[in-house]
Length: 219
Image 1 (cartoon, rainbow, N blue to C red):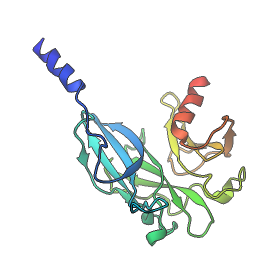
Image 2 (image 1 turned 45 degrees about the vertical axis):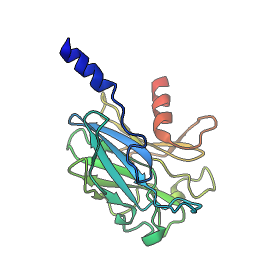
Image 3 (image 1 turned 45 degrees about the horizontal axis):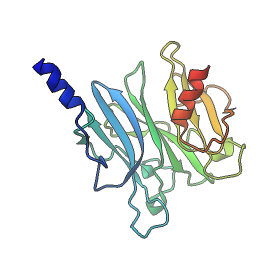
Image 4 (image 1 turned 30 degrees about the horizontal axis):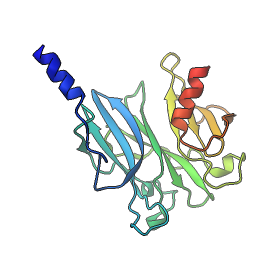
């Protein structure tokens, strides 16, 4: 009974809110691995009077109880993608991390602004540990704005999320703004395996991960 009471007390403990003050963080993406949850966030360094995001890097935290969090620092910066905009123009937008079911490595799918192809792009980095450090996996963007023609905005290729079907092993990439897009990934998770498709979602804006999961549950 004492053990049950202690477990109940632990389960009802609350983490501080915000979790990672005094930093300003956004776009959280969670990965559960080895009994810990890893939370990947973008850090916003905009001044109080700022009118836009100032996000150059991602940070990662982990916890075994979702109450106490360990800060693992910066696993990746937007400028680590040599093909992306650099310096103060670098942009570390929403990301998603998955563990490869076969090779055990970790793949960091991210949104950055491309330096030579106008608009935002999806990049992929890889690491041997969930806390990084991550390095560019292919030396180029996986998705660029000129590969998608559904809208004329520069930010329609953002917010990537990857789902790996546990039954078939097939990996699926979802992303987009205004239009939800989907493509299959090859087993290496660094190449598309077929065409880019559009999933019709009424009034879709962004944040593809929960929307994609809802679409999958309806199949």
